Image (tube, rainbow, N blue to C red; front, side, top):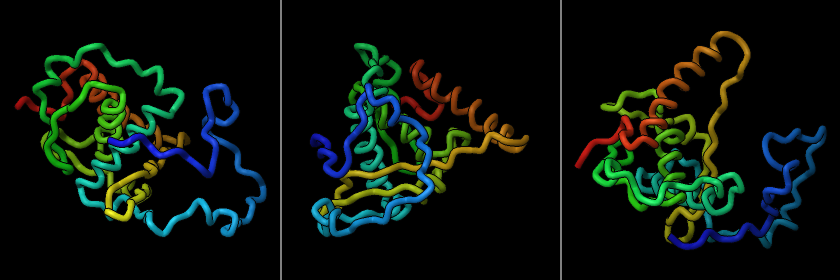
Length: 198
């Protein structure tokens, strides 16, 4: 995969810019967009489209591009250090979901972020291993940027966060957190619940 392109229109906060991380309060009045000023940073060669319009292969490309960008640019991800060797169980593991069947691939931070996105963001972590479902809500709220050849070169994955008020929210959080934490723990312990041996 090619090096991610630089972000020309906005500066990306570094680890020292602690005030720019996390949820930010919106100003009372939002500025009007100046499309003339933004013109040098816009291009007709690239198209943004909802991720729900992508083919399964393009969604996998989106997960790879976003995972690679996070692994290389997100200050918190630089502390993610995989073990020196891929666990033996993952070398032979094969994962099947609506995007197809895949081996784990290279053992590096970029691939760990890709699998995090594929297993916990793009698919429903609460679905059974034999019938993994897409997270259609996330796909509908996410965008992909394609170049003139149709290759995914960027994107944004957006997931609705549950509110934390009331019984229904906590019940939903419990239904999600138990299976997903089990899945993620098993994934890290080399026996992900959604993989099978080749």
